[in-house]
Length: 169
Image 1 (cartoon, rainbow, N blue to C red):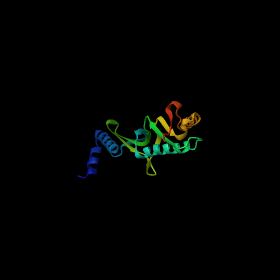
Image 2 (cartoon, rainbow, N blue to C red; image 1 turned 60 degrees about the vertical axis):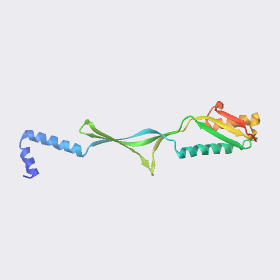
Image 3 (cartoon, rainbow, N blue to C red; image 1 turned 30 degrees about the vertical axis):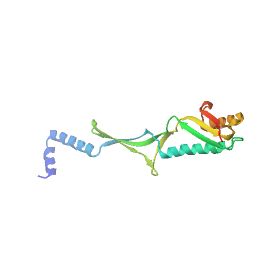
Image 4 (cartoon, rainbow, N blue to C red; image 1 turned 180 degrees about the vertical axis):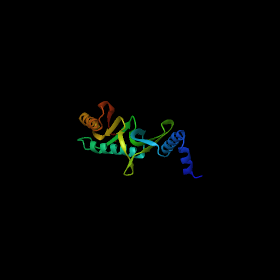
């Protein structure tokens, strides 16, 4: 007997008809599960080579600009960090439900990518713990004050986090 003939025979009985409809709906839910898509963020702490390069570049830029302060002379800068940067990436979350049974639901997360790079929802930069500036002209209190004020302004930190020392020979 063909499958279609079996279905016709079962459909003649009213109780079998209800059972047949339930089976068809169940099959549809299994084949085409309902999905709910959301984009959510997930924090990932990153301490990468690129981050270290950014930190080094900041020190170099700060050294360069402070060296232009009148009387500062040759300047070296070291920045220490209390924390590393954190990035919240966008994730595409697909929740597949099968017939409303939560025990068989599936949750899939994939990072959202645009132009080959992950989409960043938010980036928290590292917290600066302190800055040491070593300058030739740091023996002059006015030069020290100018350097401290410049570092405070550029990095958004308090003066107690900045130490200015005179460069030795």
